[in-house]
Length: 268
Image (cartoon, rainbow, N blue to C red; front, side):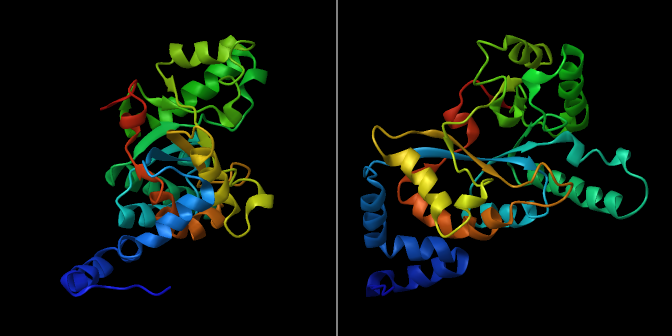
């Protein structure tokens, strides 16, 4: 890529390059954003986008936090309670890994991101008995209560089960409300859990396509930092490529806090 830096902005370019390399190249290569908007049929007026990450805490969550910090983006992390419930482990490797995840959870909050529950276990909640449903919701609340950042606290159902089918399975959303939670859905999904998309920019294509084509969409986009089937493993492909995707997403969207796109949540 050939970038022309005119004399009046020469020093600004190198200052920005030192502070935020990705943004520097985006700012001084505006013609690339024109190409990105044309590729995905995006309007010039930017959408409003909020990043969210499910199934953590995972091994790659610190890498994702590094990217978000560098890019000055605040996201929401939906945490599986069993990933940070360290009292379930006996001394050994699993306990040490849990302590790492717990420390990462503390880092998520200290760096200003929002934290919500993704339940205690990654169940299909509509298939649980009422007793099991209440237990997994309340178990997650007990573990994560000190880390919640909104009022009411955020909850996202695994698979969206109980949210998208709430007319047929009203007991799930009723249990969330009884426990004091507010459900957070999504307007866009990256499908980054699906291995068939873990090649090139197909995950970016998923998000940009949903955000830009037709009437377009604002709101919350669903990514993953964890792998629910695995105790510690994270979504490596997402973590390795997020820094590369963000400048292209910025061509079509402004990254905004959760409370900007979901007015029913307030910061604690």
